[in-house]
Length: 261
Image 1 (tube, rainbow, N blue to C red):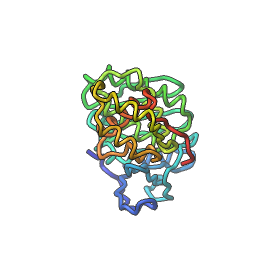
Image 2: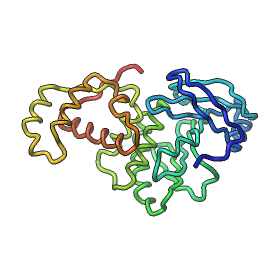
Image 3: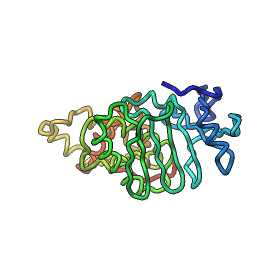
Image 4: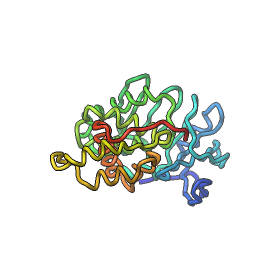
């Protein structure tokens, strides 16, 4: 449930034209007033991009940005409506390199705190029974964040969704790699090796998770931006697509090429 809004801003995204209701909570107003710049960003997640609205201590709109990379000293809060995408995480805060991103629907009752790689992750869980696995996944997330450095905001919010979708299982040896790809998602393009795809296709019947549709999909999205490949209506589907790509990467079928966003 979204937090009570001190102000409600209705804005049109300059990227996609979508009208969004941005909830400016009392906590956000206080954070803006205490900020050295007098501003706090409120991030509205649009699936394949992020709109950031900067508000002052009075809740006034002071500018809109899309695809904003977080800067040192910057505080960004996720629009509380973003939390509706998640089933395990009720609120979160991640900080690294002097910036912080957080999203809460109210005052959290208890926070699970994970430290690593010079960063910190705090998570409010809907079910405390998930705490051990949430901590283990959080460590993998922070490992990836320390390698990526300054993340793209859309990749960071995507990673939080993947973190939420992963908590029902213990982390695999490739968990950190999944977050690294997600954090870099706007900088990466998917490339397919057709010879490796043909070879794997010949042995597909021996691989339990592999179906002809998986390889057909990989061939079809060759050259696509990774963000477009993994974009899905819910976090579980995004996680399944990312896991499939990681399996194909280990078999030499796909690789991820760094391109300019």
